[in-house]
Amino acid sequence: MSVTSYRPLAVEAVIKQVRRDEEGVALYRWRRCSREGRWLASAEQGDGEQLKRSLPEPGMEICLLLSGTEVVTQQVPYSGKERRHLARLVPFELEDDVTAELDELHFAIGKPGDGEVPTAYVDREWLSAQIDELELLGFEVRHCLPEPLLLPRPDNGWTLRLDDELQVHYGAGLAFAVEPPLAAAVLQSLCDTAPRPEQLFLLADDQEHVDTLYNLLPKVLHEKLSELDIDAQLADRWDGFALDRYDSLDLRQGAFARQLPFGKWWREWRNVAVVAGIALFSYIGVSVAQIQTNNAQTAALRAERNEVFRQVIPQGAVSDHERQLRTKLAEFESGSSGGSVVQMLATVAPLIASEDKIKVRRMTYNDQRGEMQITVEAQSNSEILALGNAISEKGLRATPQNMTRSGDQQQANLTITRTAP
Image 1: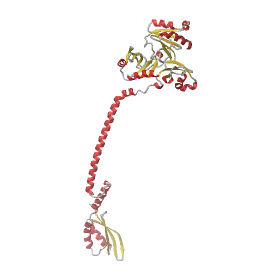
Image 2: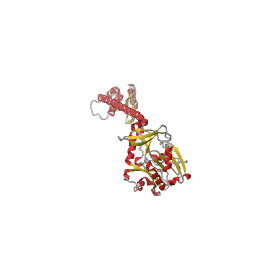
Image 3: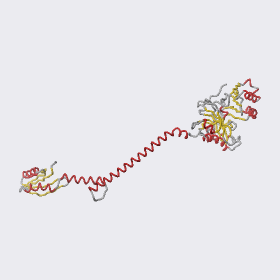
Image 4: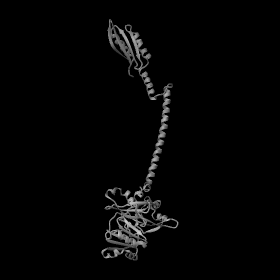
């Protein structure tokens, strides 16, 4: 028997809600598996609390199996120009075939074929309740699949399984389940409407159910049994599933598309986020404390600056402390470097008075430069130079400048400054 190869489910458990008890509590069957499609434990059953205790890992990714009696699948024809809009067009193509209002149903499509696309539809509220109850238990519902689609199907063939219901997987994305009393009529109808299978694969828990399956086959198939490749296998419900190759028709699409697993991401990164948050708040706290300390130090420096400023300039408006203090300092420096005019005059005046042949025509003093300018007149340059030398011997510097002759008199400017200490 050859089978079509599909991709693995890549989940950690398969879960099906089988019924509700008298109090309305959901009852489940489940089995843990690997992401590569291998069973890892025996099947279990129980209510939601028992399910949670059996699969306690937070955010576990699971596949939700949906009863084949609740989900309807069929092929829907389409034209080439409609291929890009199939998800929106398919519900209206099926409007005449369904008995409920379109907005009460959820539609899903599989991989489009040559002019046909496999389609499934199910009651929207029923599906929503199935998913919500599992997510409230902490599970991440990765896939929602009609249960018969997990049965391995031969190429160009059908797979039939019989236990408490008849499950039939008869094409890509095509499957259903019915109660055993309806099995014979439904199989006859399938033979009348679907292409005849070239192979049959029969599954059951025991040989008695396999024999029942043979007897349920329509007459048209019995007549051609010799031409059919019929394979039978005993396997319980879970071992009969092919987790490593599942059909592409997943109802977890459209309005029921899987949401981003923010909860799982938060659980994985929660410790890192807490540490980062603590570090951030610590940084902010240290920064605020440092800012407050700097502000206090700045206020203290300003108070100290104002106190020093008022010691230097007791009166007057305060506009620019630094500029005003620099101006005041320049005044003191200039006064200190230039010396007092009285001191300089006390040194120079006796020397001039002792020279009868020298007359003073003009005298000025520049306090900023500490410089005295004297215009003198004498009969010769030697007398003016002698006065300059006499002044220089007293610790000042006398520089003759602009010597000119006016009649029989000689004039010159003496620039007198203090010598460097």
